[in-house]
Length: 93
Image (cartoon, rainbow, N blue to C red; front, top):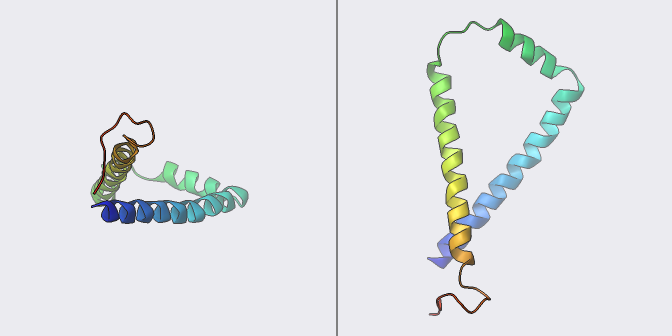
């Protein structure tokens, strides 16, 4: 079980790092050359008509991201208990 938790922790860290490595430069590029202004104008001129399929996909994606963050926090807190302070349970063989 410990190896599975280590694997998932490393995988989540790698995906988070890759996401930040892609999102931050793209955001800086978009802010520097006026793409943000075009995007704002496109959003303003868009017709307001419900959520559609992309709204549902966005909501599901948001739920998955929140669930992943909560899962990572729970796993980190669970693994951090009982180590080094002498008060926790022994996690031996």
